[in-house]
Length: 376
Image (cartoon, rainbow, N blue to C red; front, side, top):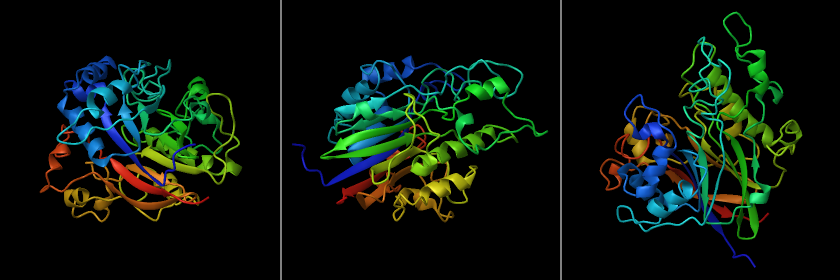
């Protein structure tokens, strides 16, 4: 009989653990860079990331920008063993017996000139998701509870053209930005979209994870802003079963998430529901205000408020570049929100050095929410 679980702490953290973060400016590297860092256990930046995780102690954690490394012993398992299982800055070690990771579109070469600069390089903006090697800016889920691998759904290969009423990307003359051949193959996800069920006590909780592309680094056509919008809109449709018939996963199964299911939608969504940042705000606003999501609580921090005191929403910011970009959104079914926060200590506190500079840990902050499992 499964143990009785009354509450769980869930977090998302863009850890910036990809090769270019550790190399001189202009160098891109590959996923062997992270593998070597994970093997030695002594990288100060990763030690600080592990210390933050140990301080907060989430039960389930999504890592964004964690390079995909096929062999877990060199990748996610090495991070757990050599960093999280070791005390960092006085924190108690933490263990995650279960994890999920999978391939992503970032750095996957396309044969097309996707950025219309006259060259089809296969890398950078000409990859299916911006990146310089397959798996750059990947994702991983760490869990203290068993993962229902048989029922995981991934949507890496869902074609953008198959989304009804997709937002078109156009050149200045109104013609399509992408060539016909490129558009036929273009995936919606810049990384991937995942539905990962975790067995918490006697119940299944669906963790809906993604990392939409930043809505910048493009031109007047706003191709990244448009893709970010539709990557977020995917979840809106996924949570509306009546609108989700068009969705198919990487195993060919159709539909979205049925009603009356516990879920937590989380990740670096690169968009703010407030008038901050460069995103097309309509999709993220619709998601945060979705009928199936409890938006009664917004994680906050003293450090964020202190970082930009002139900004109205600064306490809710999750990135050093001053925006709420990272989310932990719980279903209104099956949960009561108990507490939460953004790990962003004030400058006069002992933990501030963990986030005190870009090189200390990441340009994002860990966001967490503690959820009570309520009666169905």
